[in-house]
Amino acid sequence: MAEEITYADFERVDIRVGTVIEASPFPEARKPAYKLVIDFGPEIGVKKSSAQITVHYTPESLIGRQVLGVVNFPPRQIGPVRSEVLTLGFEDENGAIVLAAVEQPVPNGRKMM
Image (tube, rainbow, N blue to C red; front, side, top):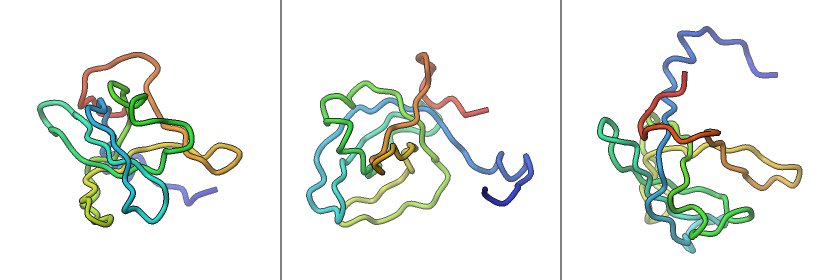
């Protein structure tokens, strides 16, 4: 189990919902990944992400899908892509990533409470 944190610590992590508007293969990545462009609404805007989600998803299946992302990490350079958000998911029993998602549609940019 991870170290216990305070609610104030949790509030510092800005997790928002966004809709994938573009998804494409990322052959330059060391591990199989996709380049995602995600719309986080008017406050956050459109952001790029690199996500290692190639086992369970195709680029076509990602378009229009709402995902969760941490939007307040500093950008990270991954090969030629500047990843601006961390797209969230969980490992399945084989270590492949399954996206974290909302159960019903919500407006882009809504913060996780």
